Length: 85
Image (cartoon, rainbow, N blue to C red; front, side, top):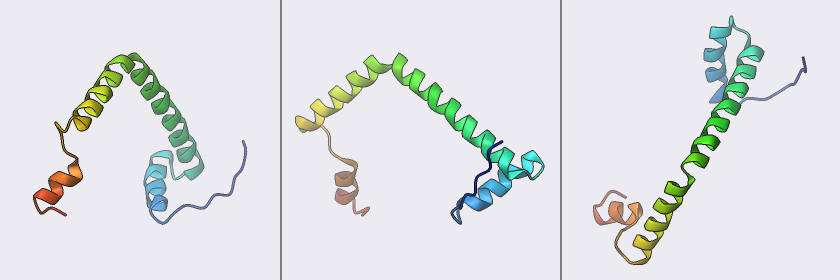
């Protein structure tokens, strides 16, 4: 098994510690499982996006048209108009 030295951010370290608890404290095994899970999730999302590509493009095109035609406003404008900024 390859051995790597990595540096974690202060935010990531407690998360890894928490996940490692499920793997008898083995941070290497926990990180390996997290990476494999990430890969599976990415693959699933790519398949999902591909199977709905036509609808997603239709929604994108409609939104683009509505913004161009002035039928919608940006979230930034809504916040500004309502004093939320």
